[in-house]
Amino acid sequence: MKLFRFEPQKSTAVAFATGLVIILLSTSMILFEDTQAETVLHIILWDFLMIFVVGFCFPLLYVRSKEHSFEALGITKRKLKTSLVLNLGLAVLLLASFIFGNKTAIAVGYKSLFAISYILVAGIFEMVCIYGFMRHYFEKAFGIIPAILLTALFYSLHHAGFQPEFLKLFFVGIMYCSVFYITRNIFIIFPFFWGVGAAWDVLINSAAGQSLQNATSFVVAIVLLIAMAIFVMKEKLWK
Image (cartoon, rainbow, N blue to C red; front, side, top):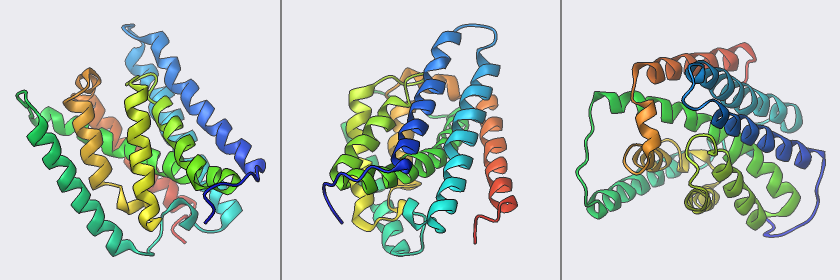
């Protein structure tokens, strides 16, 4: 494992291009804020194109063709039990720090579950595309330290059309990506550790969470999850 290197390849350009497309699709949503077409275009541009096509299907197909294994993405049985235990432990500590550090009333209802379901499904896209695909090819080209920084940068910037808190999200990305390297298994951060941070940040600390607390978000989340499962089975990606 090299902390630094400089060996860019074609896959490096593909990773950068994928990140730029995601940022572009996310940013495009700003053009349609407060318009009648906002909801429909959000589903098309964000949910279908960004999350499902560019952020889920493409990375899995590309990595399978190049690596013949998803271990490069951190999707592996290696150190799985250790990763899950650490994942849960970190999630508990993070939630405790949020609760004890919070000084305002917390209102959580059934509509919050609509938002959480969407956040978790969107998290699959982030794990596969950003913390898996992009991080892997950045590491192969530039080493671990630059990979962490570049991954965090794209993690931050891909929120442009929804939650433009770039500096905070950049450091959040550094935290998650650094923790990933403890076991190199994506299940050390997802779903619990990442889920607690994302859900709290969106629902409690950001006004963006209000737009997700509706039945439409829940339906979109379920449809996306089913589409992901069908794609994995159709392409036989579990092998």
